[in-house]
Amino acid sequence: MEKIHRLSGSELARKIRNKEISSLDAVEHFIARIESFDPDLNAVVVRDFDRARDAAKNADKAIAENALPDGKPLGPLHGVPMTIKDAFEIDGLTCDVGVPNFQGHVSTSNARVVQKLQQAGAIFIGKTNTPFMCGDWQTFNPLSGTTNNPWNLAHTPGGSSGGSAAALAAGLTPLEFGSDIGGSIRVPAHFCGLFGHKPSHGIISQRGHVPPEHGTLSDRDLNVVGPLARSADDLELLLDITAGPDEPACAAYHFALQGPRAQTPKNLRVAVWADDPYCPVSADISANIHKAASTLEALGASITEAKPNFDLAHNTETFLLLLHSVMASDFPEAIRTRMKSIADAAPKDDKSFAVLQARGSSLSHADWLAANETRHAIQAEWTKFFMDVDVLICPVTPRAAMPHTQDPDFNARRMTVDGTDRAYGENIVWMGLATPCGLPSTVVPIGLSQDGLPIGMQIIAPKYEDKTSIAVARWLEENGHQFKAPAAYN
Image (cartoon, rainbow, N blue to C red):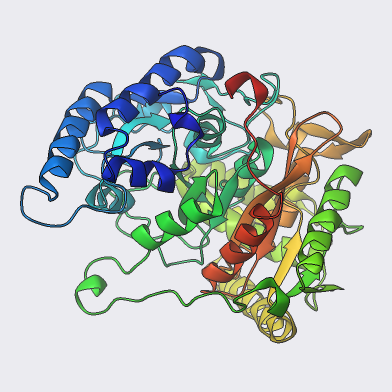
């Protein structure tokens, strides 16, 4: 019993199917860990223990009979407990994403991802904390409070899937599922020493994810939903379970993601972009990226210092315009009007994060189309780039997990990188590489900072080649770049 939380989700699923561990024992184990450790972390903010126990008993009965009640075979996650980001609706549970106006909202249906995971046999024991409206690289809100990083409680686990990452790293759950529009899977994975995957845009349905408001039927530009885990195998398992077209398209066609470009590291071509003057990263981060590249090189991969034919500043400007055009759709009219006045008053050459936010928040449709055309030009450069390399490895953020920084004025927040005072908004820059063009990006843990905090690295692959970036993460994992539990939770 004491080792259940050390198992990967895939291993736990096998042991449950093989009757080495009962589903009920697994559920009780994780409930006990939540009750014991979560008071310090505040990660699991919605709990569904009674329904989980009932589901586990039914799962164990189905295993004994070797089939579900309707005769269908057992799913790949049969009887496996897990938590999920509060942003996903689960029938009968609240879904408020830290927004006072949503407080007490009880969902009456399941998000599409929840539905697929339940069909695969997963049992949800609770939901994990988010920042207000999932809009921060930290996790705190006026309803559920602050979530702490299990590596150092004075630091953030990241956001917006910060509750997901804290619960996963502390062994309160074997699997998690989050969302990412501005790094919300990748930052928490990086800050907590986990594996995380931002899928190619559009391959997993966003239906039932909040934001936007409950009941929204359309998927959002830029946003994706995807897995966090303690192994690359678990990322791929969750991706395979949840990827595919939503209704009504699923009735007409299905797809299967192709395997990795390279079947072994010996055939892999890796580009390294470990630092950049536009957004310098800590020495710890760049050094560990080069070490990870050396690991791949020792396995036979070819390594080159290279990047696509555009600069980081140009990509960031384009991304911020598109990003804030999406985010502003949740703003009240008064705030959008204020953003427009800021944008109109700013000099044309002002490319500060605050002004780009204002411009993106008040884009006309014609201006959005212009930004979208720029995005397609950047995509063309990525296409050329991936003719010569298979993946790009690069930072996630400029530093490891930050101390809690909760100034209500987002643009006034600061952070320190190797002793240098920097704008908090710079956390967006490296995440913005993969997002505008919908590229898959897998985060893998690659080391620790001098302060003993985890460091992760992005592996960016061509669009729809998610299996390539996950395969590279797996090769790194098999050769020393693994999840390591924070000592207090091991």
